Image 1: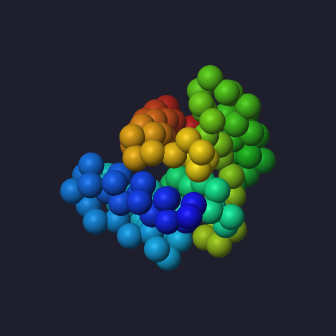
Image 2: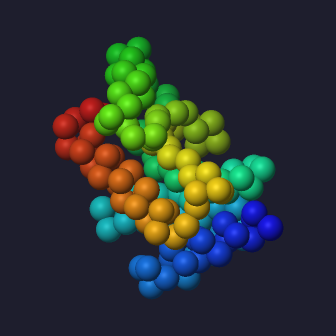
Length: 129
């Protein structure tokens, strides 16, 4: 039931942008006009959805970069529930946001995605990366 509900929410989210989104394989990738890729991925237990985007290669991380990311992760007012982490499959560091199944709706997914895009843009403009 939860997997099917997430599929419905993602499909409704897609209709907001005239997109036919199919997350039946567990994930879907959206590419913005600026070239950034945004992933919607069902959590393994289907109890939520993770939104994430690539920031850079984890191979390029230095001690200073990691310290900066950890400092940002602890800035709760700025991050508003988002966090930075390593994505092992792609050897990248990413900006993540989780939406729990109990809270999930297409409007919330839209709001959280927009919030994450704004956060990423602000951090990029201020040369955090």
